[in-house]
Each structure stands twice: as C-alpha cells, then as structure tokens.
Figure (cartoon, rainbow, N blue to C red):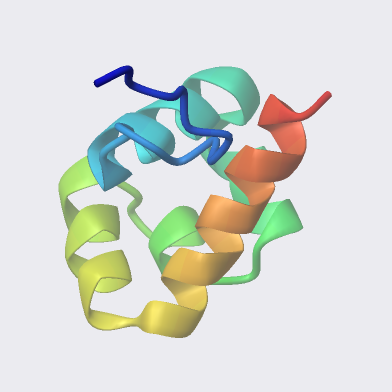
Length: 73
C-alpha cells in the first residue's frame, strides 16, 4: 500500500504547535489585533490560550484559519 500525502495544512499539527508558530510569527499583540479574543490580549500565555481554545470551538477555528492563511502564502 502506498501512502498519500495529505493536502490538509493542519495534518499532523497540534494546537500547541499552531499557537506557538503564530506567536513566533506575529507576537501576542498582533494576534490580538487579528483575532479579537481576550486570551491574546490580557496576560497571554500558551497554556491559557490552549485551555481556552480547547473549550471554545469558534475561537479555535479562527486560530486554525489564520494558520492556514499564513501557511498557504
């Protein structure tokens, strides 16, 4: 059997990897400007952001969509 490469840019990426990538690329302040959620603007940390995103599907989708838009460029 041959394995096919996934076209999904999220394939194999953990939520933590995505958050850390976006923080490294944009920083907390720019993330807060691009996606208006408090975990990016008020005392931000990777741990608190992950906790919030795992409980809040609409916010997770926005973060994943931003990652995809950056990934595709």
